Length: 134
Image (cartoon, rainbow, N blue to C red; front, side, top):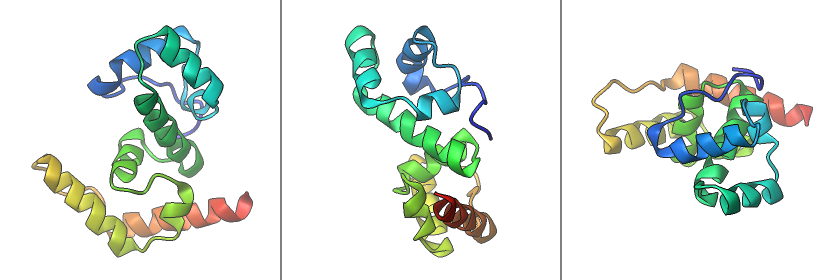
């Protein structure tokens, strides 16, 4: 996914944040990624958003924009403990598969794991490539 992709259909837990972001004119993942701490604080002060949720969304946006991940995959990685590009780049495929699978089991989704070794390896290679370009 690219940074111009719209911020639509965020999970229900982010409904206040989505409304406040739209009011502030932040409509895509790239704009969310570029949200600085000062503007984030202003959104928290003037709306119903929480700083915690906005920081989570900004972290997801970083993974979406830098690694071109789907928002759901970026959220899965972040909640499994891989919140940054460097954390992904320094991980092993087995570690990513194990931790994301464990998270999905804890959530009780009942679906088959979406991350396998090939996907994890592709994410790691993408993260390593991203690190060398910065």
